Amino acid sequence: MEYFYSIQGEGVYAGQPAFFTRLGGCDVGCVWCDVKDSWDADKHPKKSIDFLLTEALKHPSRILILTGGEPAMYDLTLITEAFKKEGFRVHIETSGAYELVGNFDWVTFSPKKFKAPIASAAIQADELKVVVFNKSDIAWAEEHQKMVPDTCKLYLQPEWDKREVTEKIIFEYVLQHPNWFVSLQTHKYLGVD
Figure 1 (cartoon, helix red, strand yellow):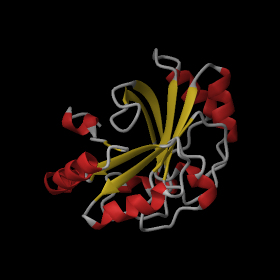
Figure 2 (cartoon, helix red, strand yellow; figure 1 turned 45 degrees about the vertical axis):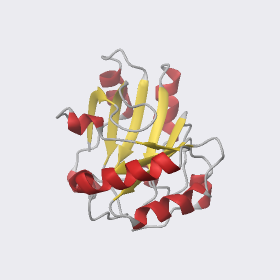
Figure 3 (cartoon, helix red, strand yellow; figure 1 turned 180 degrees about the vertical axis):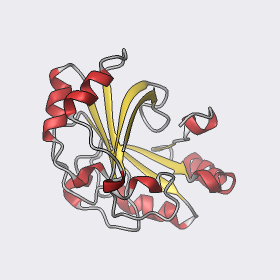
Figure 4 (cartoon, one colour; figure 1 turned 45 degrees about the horizontal axis):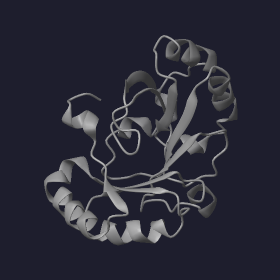
């Protein structure tokens, strides 16, 4: 769908520059999705791996973030191998609804209620990031914490349009559960996409 060089705004790597590749195609269907234009993969021109690698190498960061849409809908072996060969760390942001096929250095698992995640994706998670749209999403987060490794970093992230309400819910929860952290969409606070 698109590629760009920016700052990672969320989770463990928040604040670090990275080359983002947003893949078109998603059948998860989150009602609050902020990139609904990514859902239909056929609406976007295809780019070769060589093209994306050439674009990424124009920038100093050596982190590639594969996002979407839902990037795990695809076999990502070729793109992950090509970028790793050039010294990139390869990260993926996924709902966990599909098997992860590729060579990843970091897996951000962000399960959604609209399409259940699979256990094999959850056990590969380095980071669990749950978007909090309402108070019941805290229980959803706790259920998915049981699916990830003990070493997985745990994040609650307010849904952007409801952040004035959900930030308070998350704040109170994290004070009582210090194994969880707050993830804010830093890039949105800075006014960049």
